[in-house]
Image (cartoon, chains in turn green, orange):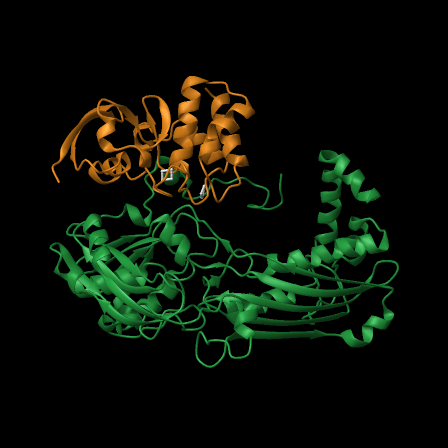
Length: 428
Length: 155
Ligand code: FES
Ligand code: FES
């Protein structure tokens, strides 16, 4: 018998039954009487001013209930989870391929698609910023405001400059991780309607209903108690549904048409405009003693964060403090810079930058093992966090530090299931 | 657009549906018949979320026009449960912890049902192969495979 009521006990997931029966309602499964379908007209260039946007032909199509651009927004036209830098509908300029320029609501999905075809746009294109290096180059076009620097962080622990003298071996490498799409299996979807009390109701596939509520209220210029957001059963998010998806667009259309409005993104549209994992480049210098104790780690971290901030400020907060991973190191420095570019927006993705940092610290541990001719698991054990370790934030770990046990168990299992690979590890 | 009438069997009952000829079987099931367990994940035959059992075979309903289903025998997840209670495969998915967000699950369960109808005692290899057309972004597949094996052991 377990001494806990819950731990080590198997429970069926609370809502597994309705998911197994197929009765759970996801956002696209909601239908309402008198409901309109909707879609978004999006930019096909990454950086431009809108010279002309002609909505007349789309508006004239029978069966179209509304075609709206930013001028129809009654409240604020800037949103974003931490920094309010993204428009609901583009007003000043286009900052990425797929920026929303106009929304359409019509009686059927076919009519929506037809109306979207009738919208005409003329761009005055600007040179796009395509990488971190381009964003930082002198004279670079500016994506937002006065500078392309989206966020900066500096982490300093111990004294890295003085530590190199104490190192017997130093390894230096650069690691880059790539941009990545969550590819949640359910494309973003939602439905909005005004109820009899005049409350704007939004049912959506979302990870952030409380944030969505603030944004919808601000966009419509109404108090929060006149907005209700309901999270439909959500088909995966992994961070990608923390940013607002269709919610503002359906709410705006329902506001103007006074009818329920539903929007379901195609896989293509969902992949195009949902956030991505930050691609991070880490130039890292690691020093250790002959017997494999880490002495110093110095990292320069750069990132193309894309067109909008999203969760960037959280990611740049996490990645540097995890840059040495679960290893003790008395001297650590990390300088991180995230830049705005005209690439897809990066945001939260399972770990807020920590998986990217792991590519660097684990790569360095392997490189160090090679340089010292030491078993890479032994090297990790010698540096593993334990109770009493002071981590680079200055925090002393006082309990629940299971890394050594985990590593020993992992070694045991690896010897059992992949003995050849483990033998190679020793000889390499 | 002139509508056509499609006659077929859905979840053991004969139906006739008036529908535009450019609609897919997926639309007919979800919109005209209200069978929203059928999910749309990619619209191009890649993810398997829209799988239904079609004349005994698991097929992706996003790739079939409604008109093609004339005379077909179609089963969706709604037609698998008995009086709102899970059948042996559904129960095995629940017990094995094979369900996370659940969006892939209707397709997964129907693919498993189609396999077990033909081969009630599949090997793990046969299970993996049969399930290989259904994508899941949450579970990592292991528990789904275990669920199918558990269901088979109870057949
Ligand atoms: S929606 Fe049919 S296979 Fe993905
Ligand atoms: S349970 Fe979420 S995609 Fe399979």
